[in-house]
Image: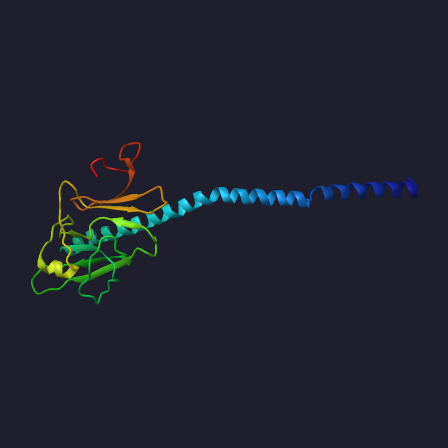
Length: 221
């Protein structure tokens, strides 16, 4: 092969490489089409994303409520004394001797009640609900009482009413305590049930509990 023929071959190879390299690029039109498609996809997914966020808030509040109730029930067993779980708008502390119970309160508190005359209630723990689910509403009793063996128990004494700001615990065998948790715009409300025996369970009120829907609520709730 002569010098001229070799130069021609090199030029052809270089041209092929340049052509292949240019084929991997994007034109301005292709880039704009891609950006437009991405924007459309984001707009279509925005409603479902917001719905997921709302449902997550409902679940977060439901789990916080469920955990607080379970703690109250377990503390009643551990201490062998009556314990109250309460919702309140004021922030409970170990130094506070009383609180005002309120349905749909922003905070929850657990207190061990006096077992003998002359004793005072004892602060156990507390938590806040608004930080995990702003705008979520809770419909249910302001207070729930567990006796020394962890079962639901009524308490309508004046001492208890003074402690809770007027609230009292009542027990109805036909309708145990139910907390309904929901948020405007969310499509999955949740419910927290407290059985007469003290068992606490979260369920989906849109489903009836069955083999097909173990996460559903009992038909009687």
